[in-house]
Length: 115
Image 1: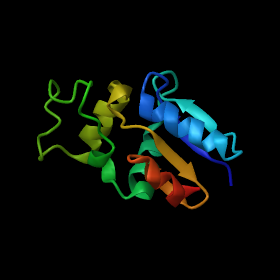
Image 2 (image 1 turned 30 degrees about the horizontal axis):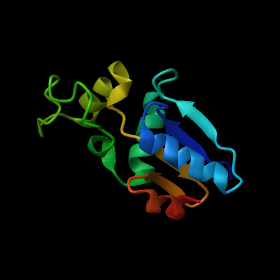
Image 3 (image 1 turned 90 degrees about the vertical axis):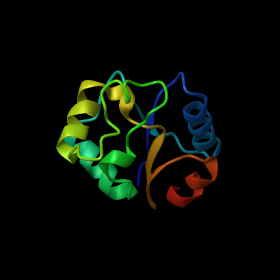
C-alpha cells in the first residue's frame, strides 16, 4: 500500500516526518494541501480513518481558527468542513496515510503506527 503525507513545506514537523518516511526507503505521495486542497470527501475520510473526527483535523495556531469562531462547540461538521475548504491552512499537519492506518503525526513516534 502506498503512503501519503498531507504536507506543509514550511512546517518543521511536517518536513521532519517526510524526511523520516524517506529515510525508511519509502517515497510517499506528497500532497501540499495549500496548493492542492483535499476534497470534502477526502477530509471526511481523514477525519474518520484517523479517529480524530472533523473537529480534530483543525489546527488553531497560525490559522484563522479564532477569528472564524471555530471553537464554538455548536458548529456542525459540515460548517467545520466549509471552513477547512475555504481556509486549507486550518488542516492540521502532517497527516500520514499508510498501510496500517491514518494518523496526525504529532509526536513523531506515531509514525510507527501507520507504516
